[in-house]
Length: 80
Image (cartoon, rainbow, N blue to C red; front, side):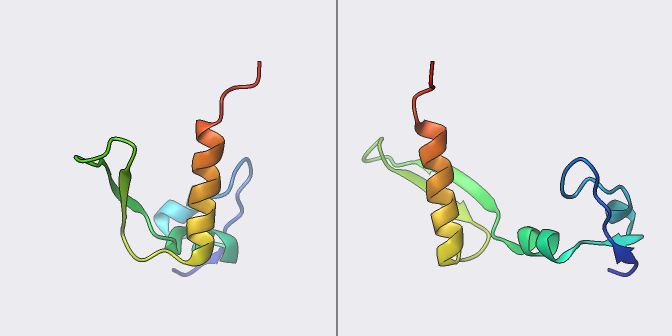
């Protein structure tokens, strides 16, 4: 991509110039976009506690840690 670095305002990636190529992603957004994407999520047929998550490519150790911490936060009971 060519152009000036993105100039996101409210949240990362919201610069409309990114979509039409007038801006290029900043280093942080470029790294985020390069991370593996979830391509499928399936429940195990033999053990309902097991969930298979397929990614577009092999995750790094940091990606695995991030996935684990996000799932743990998601599955915690709400604080009342």
